[in-house]
Image (tube, rainbow, N blue to C red; front, side, top):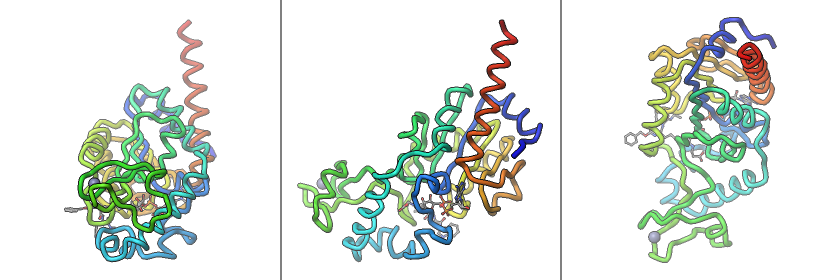
Length: 253
Ligand code: BV8
Ligand code: ZN
């Protein structure tokens, strides 16, 4: 795949870059997406599982679903797409990953500046006192783990109808308002308010690049649509950036 001169020029001159990611960037690590044909929502309905009423009605079922997902995520590794973004953080003067994913793969790949909009499946907390619990403490065979205070423990993820964590959301919005380039990677762009961020960046003047094997509702607003897999395209973009920075350092001597 060749990249347009416009894209390469935008990346060459960019100071602030944002990578906005969804489940698609983890697909090549073996984490199932939500809305693909093998997606999670084909087997379960989100309203039945990823929401507070479902949890209050049937905490055993929701915990069964999350412990199964925790096990899958504990066994997978970050892929070339995650690692490429982690390296880009060292190339641009300001680089932020804003992820809808709860799988912690960006941090495990080495990204430091990460905004987790929908929480993190490796964390759990008590709904009564807020005390945090690790997976080792909760995955101990009990169907619904409880806190010494008597409260019920839940995964630290954002369910439908729940507000996003304030600091993560505010930091993500600020990064999008400052961005020169926003890469929207592996997201179907249907879950709000997260899905509104690329347009917010565009309104503030960012050059929008979408990386996805399929078009999405964002595609018509993207300045560049790179059709393909994140694990293949992101390392190619990184190669261009590295050759450019080597050329710059040669020309400075
Ligand atoms: C809120 C965490 C407000 C839990 C998740 C009607 C209109 C607008 C909004 C709403 C509405 N009705 C309800 C709402 C609000 C709702 C919403 O947006 N619903 C949608 C479905 C219509 N949003 C909310 O409820 C949010 N909260 O709005 O609160 C509020 C206001 C006042 C008072 C109280 C509340 C909370 C939303 C968070 C929900 N939590 N997950 C868990 O994971 O268990 S959502 C879930 O979807 C995940 O977080 C996921 O990240 C997110 C988005 O999905 P994607 O990441 O995009 O994944 P998807 O499978 O869809 O797409 C994958 C893409 O990858 C595809 O395009 C595919 O082509 C591509 N791909 C595949 N392979 C590759 C690839 N790309 C690159 N490379 C590859 N190899
Ligand atoms: Zn408690």
